[in-house]
Length: 185
Image (cartoon, rainbow, N blue to C red; front, side, top):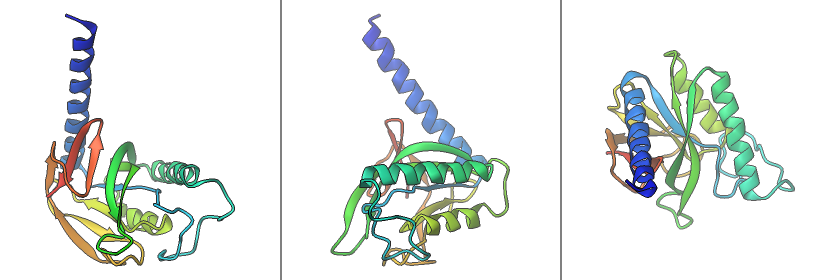
């Protein structure tokens, strides 16, 4: 057996295992997905709370990386499990300024079943001026986007149902764990 075939087999196993582990967390705990990234991290015009970025600071990618590191530290400080994933999202959905954004996102697991988990995620979504955060109740049914800034979709404090976990499927709003996509339909 060639080394190439062995590595391809290993990578397929790791990706399937990671997606399987993600599904297991979704079935056993409340989970969420969010990021510190913004298409233009210096534009805080839609934020529900005060601005967090100095426009004279580093370039957009550097700012976004720092924001995500800060978010990860805050989440871990709250005792949550955090895994980096690749998210794909339409920022400013249904507006003339809509654009697809691929960004480093965070899959968050409420390992200790904190009753304030969703409130903490909502607060962090507001703090990092996100259009929305994905809230996934234990069991994976009834997942929804919650608006955490003043963008028109889904709207501040508004919920938009996303459906149930669908591993291995792609969609307009999706996440990749390794190379494997997942969506909520």
